[in-house]
Image (tube, rainbow, N blue to C red; front, side, top):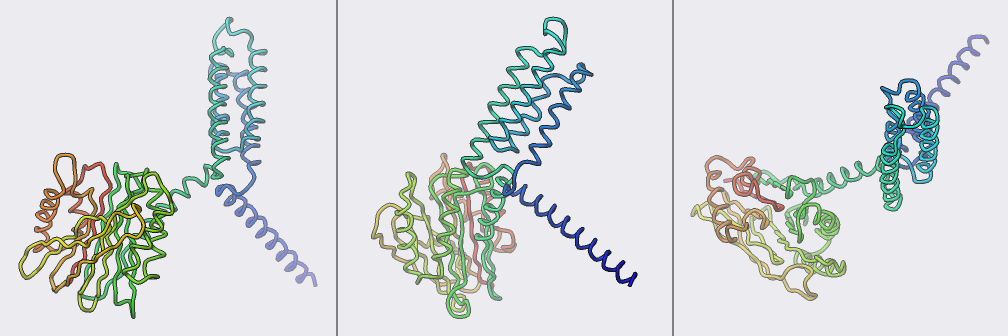
Length: 381
């Protein structure tokens, strides 16, 4: 019986310990996600105020009265506005105590001067503005960075090209303007049809660049990803055009090219919405040819009609889709940029196309302040 009681007591202790660890872990996760109360951070920062005050009174040379800005700045990032005001009240009381104990600022250094009060008040004001902004947006700072990282990763996942059967090679490179994480260029792709026989790829260039176009590109990439494969290929661009018109954006247009490729025969269709022509390398002749459908920009007017261009990728052929940031700049027109791109691509005909998309952007448009995207699809000889 004693052994049973010991085992039972041990089991109870393990369960209690497990519950405590689970509760602490959940509390920590909820806090950093912004879902929990800020009482823990508030209590910690509130305790630093008397600690700083005590240090200032005992060691004024090492602890300046202006050190109170440290919990105030941290509170602006961590606390909600109501808790932040309570922290400000405690800091103001600490300044009063320091001023009374240390004496007038005219009697020596390390006193509470008017400048100290102004610095602390200014930091408190800006901290309150930041807290109010976060409260209005509804995204705590602890969750804001994670959310942006998650959005960036979602765009990256959506831009991944599906695996292709033996005999096909594909790769894509995307470079946002100014080295930013968000781009106005995006790709959505899917294998559709019986047994995934058809590859559908949509390359879109949203008006604007970088962060300005990134939010609209994120919204459109999700919508286009849902439309792709759910509609017949010829209905995709009209549906995308209607969706863009319904957004009623000030900068509401975009260019797009929709590739529909039969992976068994190599036959393809290119449907274009005001996008640049694609380039096809014909292995038989060794020449690059432009391929482009006809259609207006997305988001300009309703009832737009998009006429496809048809072609075939034979063994050894390469099809290249790209956005205007790769071929257009202030010192040259688009035709010159396309010629330069095709000329640089010639070196990969014999060297192999592995990594060619990234290297082509480096060679042709490395320092261009615009979003750049390049997609290569090759049928092996």
